[in-house]
Length: 142
Image (cartoon, rainbow, N blue to C red; front, side, top):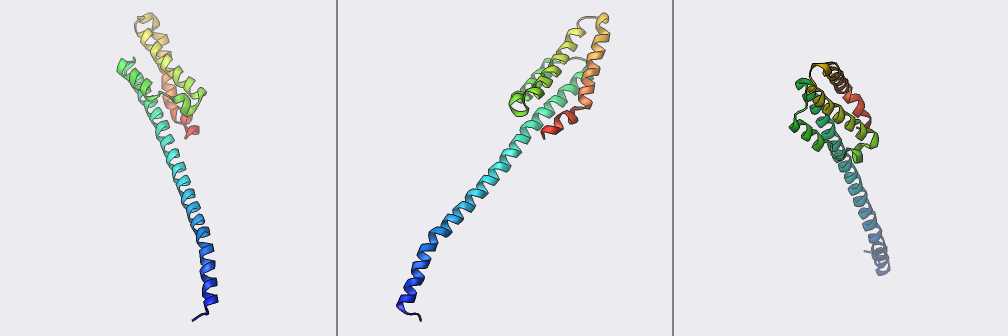
């Protein structure tokens, strides 16, 4: 058994070190929470970007297959790409606006009769090219 002075020293040291260990433990927990939240944010951002990608792909497929834009497809596309400027930036948002405008133009050309058939075909071919290159267009953002 130690002398009372040695026991007292041990108690003093442990009393002094407990706050240090608690601080280190709290710092570790804070770091792990920060890391987990960062990963969760990255996953949520990916989910939002993928939803825009999927909405664009489905919209393009529908326009190409049907040769026209049905209102429900157009609304689904607009809903699915809503907020794309904040997710991808202005350049990608303009690209999505161009797809919407070209698809809407296909509908206008549908009503124009046979004299607009060439223009309609060119617009659908442009949309088809966009569908073929959609992964390349979205890939840098993922």
